[in-house]
Image (spheres, rainbow, N blue to C red):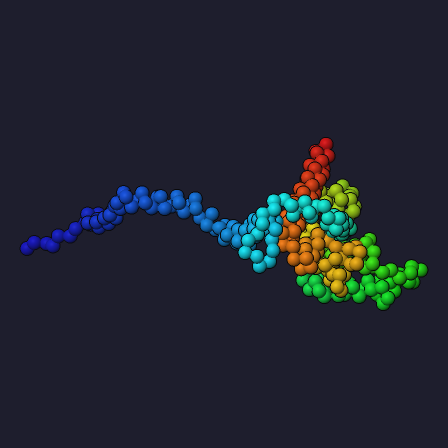
Length: 337
């Protein structure tokens, strides 16, 4: 009688290993590698292409076409346009009204931008402190910026009205006779600048506030331990750390200041709106441009003014950048010493 045989556990059969996946053709691997490299190199350009397409259609093409119009004697409805070269530019540059508009634009820009950015810096510093309702205050400072320009112009026109304006009413209590704010150059500049500052001060304050919150708190704590007051911390820590942001706001304010149009136009009002008053006391370059377009139908002159305005913005933005950058570099060298 034979006994059943058993297989030891250690001698159990090892399951077969799975087979290898079939090898892909080398041509397929080469194509996949090429597509991978192409995707890595080309995808960034594809992502940013929409911006350049939109900029080319709505920015670069109008700029080039405006330059083409500026070099021609452009008449509305004409089949052909006579090439005149730089005659339109010479005509505009020899017009005293154009230089008056440039002077007004620079004057309003200086009177409005300097106090606007200083007050925005002070306001941002106040909003950066701990206080009750801080979130609502931060939201509230942006309300003037989202208010309709027409509504703002109507409001400030009433405030600066000669006969029944609130400003003249307040000046009456300190013995100042009523001022016709729209009739004189400097008073019109001041009224328009007040309007611009009211609209844009909160916007710039939020930009400064965002930059302030990125400054490490350890720096302020160390300064406080060394006995630095809040005012000393602001001028010695906050302002130097905000120099790149200040440069940005200066350049943006320069661009916006030279394109100023709605505020002086609506503040002047009446039949001489594009003229900035009967004496052109508040006419800006953009208003002078629209005068060529609507009142004189000189499209070639209008295009020449647009290009001259473009060059003015480039020059003044570059000058502001160089000045602020030099101040920043001198501040850094002074800090190292």
